Length: 366
Image 1 (tube, helix red, strand yellow):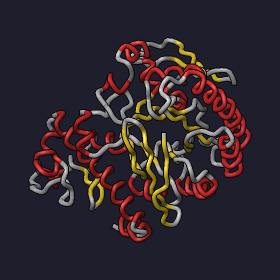
Image 2 (spheres, rainbow, N blue to C red):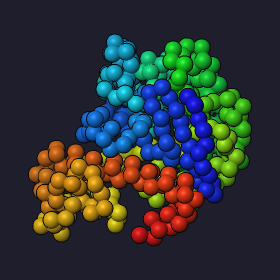
Image 3 (spheres, rainbow, N blue to C red):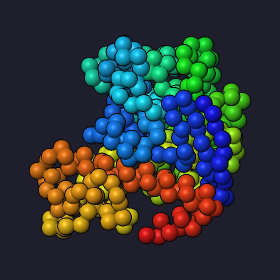
């Protein structure tokens, strides 16, 4: 991985992350392909939309289809037919949020499979081994996602465990990595406590990860508390490495995070909301199932040039949703991803022109 800063406007910045499989311009939004697919879309559609990197999830892929099947395909890229970079999350958040019976100690985490109830044990070393088999371009350390709310003692204990796991993940990654172009990112934890976050950052910065992520947010905390954490943390993060905010969020959330220096984002919001009929447009969120759109001959967004907006009316797409036709979810997903990806391009352009503050104000005031 090669990384370079292109321009900085205030704290907002544009950067370039280069892999053998492709170049990523940031700030970037990564569509989420949890099970090896971005729901309802094909890889070719993602390429046409301008996606430069997508996200897969180690937790889900190790359960289904299993690492052996992906290994037989020579990695996740071949398995899912995607040739550009992939980032894989280690699964710490999913273990925290999805498993009903989780046992965690300093050595490992045990959890029940959501598929058949089998007990699965995951260590930092195992998480790295699986991601090596997946062949992802950016791999994430195994961490413990701090619950919210958490007392300071609870957040500190969880953070210390994640620090140990970060070092073990780093050692395992460099001992067994077969793709020299792959990168490993550490994950900053510490709950909503600024001093713990900064302490954790200082320790992870000394491990020399290729990039750093901010975890443990978007877990139900108030937006104001999240903003305080980000505003205290981002100025202290290394300028020469990518900064990834995990699991956030809405377009306004993204713009606010870019304003303090975040480079990379992922979230299920554009695809999940699309499947529920919530459409992101230049004029705000449109709920396509609602009655006012029954006879609406307009495209989803008159300022959008995606396939869905170029070919179909709101009336038709509403009809598809009300008849439970799969095409409705597909067209909505294509549009929402187009909206997000084009938003990131507009953000990049405004930063490179030193006009980000003006752009952000205009967008948020709409």
